[in-house]
Amino acid sequence: MNVQATLEISERISTISVSSTMKVAADADRLRREGVDVVDFGAGEPDFPTPDNIKQAAIAALAANFTKYTPAGGTQELKQAIVERHKLDFGTDYSAAECLVTVGGKHAIFNLTQALIDPGDEVIIPVPYWVTYKDVVSYAGGLCVFVDTDEANGFELTAAMLEPHLTGKTKLVIINSPNNPSGSVLSREEFLRIHELTSSRGVLLMTDECYCQFLYDDKPFSIASAPGAKEDVVVAGSLSKTYAMTGWRIGFALAPAPIVNAMNKLQSHSTSNPTSIAQKAAVEAMRGSQASVPVMLAEYRRRRDFVIDRLRQIPGVSIRVPKGAFYAYPNISVAYRGGQVKNSMEFSQKLLNEAHVAVVPGEAFGTNDHIRISYATSMHELERGLDRLHRFIEKVS
Ligand SMILES: Cc1ncc(COP(=O)(O)O)c(C=O)c1O
Image (cartoon, rainbow, N blue to C red; front, side):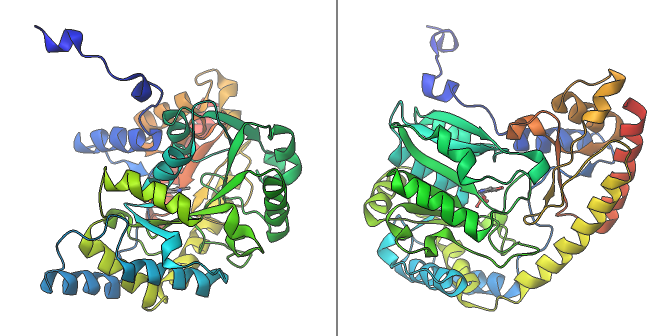
């Protein structure tokens, strides 16, 4: 029998698509292998090396043969270190039993959605959103309810925008501040209003704190520190960006113990523990010197200011100043006027193929008129790429 002919991919998998940020990276990589000089603004990853003290901790773990299975949900030592760091940074009060260590922040979000959502449950996702949310909700059989935000107001979500979308079926609201891709940051007051609202409706609030240390104006804040928030807030955390540790794959969840236990059950049958050596490195990241974080932030600020200045010089392009993370999300719809491109997907493809600059189209994040530029790259690359972008937009507009 021909296996290919009878092979049918599950309906569950058919509800999701390949991450478009990864697709951009693959297209850019293909061109590069063909010898093309590509400027890459696609990757959402720090260009800094992992700080040395963290690398040394991994080397010491190897030397000590810390190379075996650990408990599926992470070592007690790391869970303790994570809850202590969260307390120091944000004033929260979690115990190790309310912490799960995962294979990156994405894994925490995947486990959480699979552990919580039943078919038909509604999950509220503000637009623009990080690509993965909608796919993991769909994979669990949930219904994504998208809430538009206001570009003129820097894409900042408000409780008033959220309120009309809450129904009896709403199970979860997902908030990401600082936001990927827009760089918007919720004020403490608005975040508290949103939590009051979700709490009063018996709805869980997931706060994706992936960029929690990269704020340019405000002080880092976690809604999990609000009175009573531990009952109905789930933190999805990641070491990837804060400590330039994307490849190490360490993230975590902070949640009520029954949710942690449910996520742990799933994890015990899928990945099992995050890599033992990476866990030791993560303990050092949590407990060791934090000096690298403000250094990276200062450099991101310098680049952000440069990128915004350059984007503002391109006729017809508008850009709100990002208040956090390391992305700019300009409105490039002026380029549609010339008729050569009519949406951000076509714009990004043409930009890559003709001007050799990789960006992520806004469609990946739920808006049609934008592109995402990651400025987690060197000033030299930013200069070259923005020159090319400027010329390209003038040409097609
Ligand atoms: C908003 C947001 N959340 C979570 C993640 C997950 O990061 P990781 O799985 O590397 O910890 C990312 C990565 O780009 C992100 O941008």
